[in-house]
Structures are given as structure tokens and as C-alpha cells.
Image (tube, rainbow, N blue to C red; front, side, top):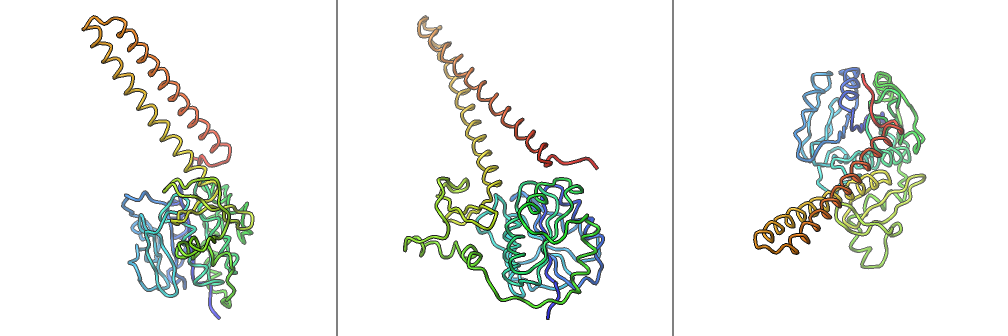
Amino acid sequence: MFNRDIIVIGASAGGVEALTRLVSHLPSDLPAALFVVMHFPSFGISVLPDILNRAGSLKALHPEDKAAIELGKIYIAPPDYHLIVRRNHIRLSRSPRENGHRPAIDTLFRSAARAYKRRVVGVILSGTLDDGTAGLAIIKTFGGIAIVQDPEEALFDGMPRSAIENVAVDHILKVADIASILNDLTHDPVEEGETVSEGIDQEADIVAQDKAALEQGERPGNPAPLTCPDCGGVLWELGDGNLIRFRCHVGHAYSSDSLLAEQSDGVEKALWSAVRSLEEKAALARRMAVQAHQQKRYLSEAQFRERAEEAKQHAALLREVIYQQNENKVRSEEENGEGGIEG
């Protein structure tokens, strides 16, 4: 018999505050190892271990690759590295992003579920979109416990609501109550399960199997008429209960929401590139008009000025499209409760 001594936590926007409060309520003798993925910019410097060390009595740190797992410690994924739980040790990986993130919550949750099965407790805190939902579902598949921060308390409720809507979560609680139940669960004896879902096996090994599978004309899932925002490769649709996810042959993975968000960003970048090209075209046409005027080629001057004005108007129209798109995005986030709250 074992206890539920592997706790994996995912957070994004608004997550620092939630993590700080959670850690402050955990006892110093908690008989569990905690693993945290917080979305950071890949080029950022994380001070989260320092923040959590000041907030609570458990030791928080960025682990080294292949570090042994010790109870009573909080292992935080460093920026630009996936945090992967293996049996008795930790791996850090710069494998492809999932849901546009590295570290990704789904990566952590999935690895912990495969390594420790029923001993795992998954926790989703404040954040936007839906990273962690698929991973939490896998934790449940292996017999683990799923806990979600109360969306009414979360600064950003996108991740909590996604988990609640798509996973049979065990507890929806405020942060202080999450700390209390984690303490209780770590003293809850369980037997480790051995059953591994075929679908989970396929996804976990998908990158390693990819070349051989393609050579044999086989592939888990169905090809989707979509391209990967990261590498431009073909995306394959992977069904997982109520969830629809996508993965390319390189290994980039997306939920429907994260793929839509990445595509929206790609469209905006393309539009801004078009604006830049049009404004450069207008500037060049004006310069050529000046040169034509100096050379007394007045018909050419008029044509160049007409081209400059046309390019200027097209650029202004595209700018308006971009601004309207961003306003619609903000309005949608507010309507879906992802805009955050004061306090």
C-alpha cells in the first residue's frame, strides 16, 4: 500500500497568488512531493522558488535533470523546460511545446499519472485557456484524484472551468481548502494500479514511434486539414473522451482552444506584416513621386502619388481589422470569465 504522495499542480495567469496562498497553508511535515508547472516566458528568469520559500515551510526549488524525488519538497519547472516525473526521479526536457507552452501542465500531469497512477493528485489553479485539462483527465483514468480551484475565487477562471467542464473532478475548492484536503489525501492509503490505457500509451510514445509509424503508413488518430502553428507540419486529431486534441509528427500538441489561440496570433502577425509592407510601399511611392516631380515627369508623379495613397488606405484598413479583432478577443474573454477580477 502507498499514500497519495505525488501532487502535481498547474497554474498560469493569476497562479502566483494562488500558489503562494496554497503553500502558506501546507504543513512542514507534508509526506508528499509537489511538482509545479507555472507558465513562464521561455526567456524569463523565474523567482517562483524564492516566493514560495518565503510563503511556506516546504523547500521550493528548480530541480536538476535526473534529480531524485524527495518528499517534503516543491519541484518547480524552470522556464523553457518541461518537468517530467519518472519513477523515483525527475527529467527536464526541451521537447516540443504543448498548448503553446514549455513547460506545459499536460506534460507534467501525464508523466506523473503514468509513473505513479493512483498515488497522484492533480490540482488546477488560476489560468486562461485549457492547459492541464487533458492531463487531469489522464490522472483520473489512472485512478488519481482531480482537484480544481473554485472558478469564483480564481483570478482567471479559464483553466478551472475547462477542467470542470471536461473532467469528472473530485473536488472544486477554494485555495485554503485545497491545502487542507491535500494534507488529508497524503495520509490516504491506496494500491497502485497497473492498467494502462492503449490510447494513453500511444500518445505518450507518439514522437518516438512517429518515423516508424509513418514508414508503415500508420498513425494514431486521423489527419486534420490543419497545419501546426509551430512547425507548419500536418496535425493529427486525437480523440480523448470529450476532448479533441491535435499533435504534429514533430510532437507539438494542442487542445482545440490553444490551437485556435495560436492560429489567431498567427493571423495577427501576418496582418501586421502586411501593414508593414503596405506602409513601406507607400513610402517608396512617395519618394518616387518626389523624384518624378524634380525631373518634371508630372504624369509619373501623379501615378506614384496615387499608388502611395492607395497603399496608405489599405494599410489603414488592415490596422482597423487588427484593432477590431483584438477588441472582439477581449470582449469574448470577458464574456467567458477570463478577464480577471480585482482583489
